[in-house]
Length: 69
Image 1 (cartoon, rainbow, N blue to C red):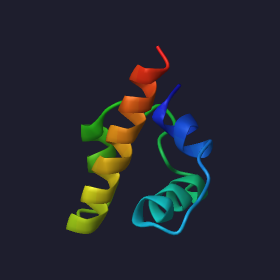
Image 2 (image 1 turned 90 degrees about the vertical axis):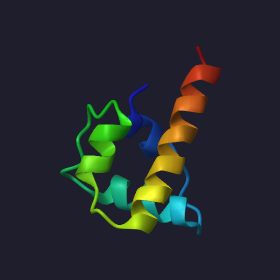
Image 3 (image 1 turned 45 degrees about the horizontal axis):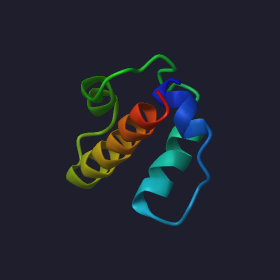
């Protein structure tokens, strides 16, 4: 499952990660084939809080992906 599809499957909750999930789900320009932390980091604004939240979210995606192999 791609990162984008994984994010689309998530429920939006009231946390920094949930806010980022909502932003990604609402972004029609978000790259659907994004497959690396580097690409995600480069796509998002360079803001320390956003980058840290995105890194946590991407690590959760990788862990979930490994778990479902």
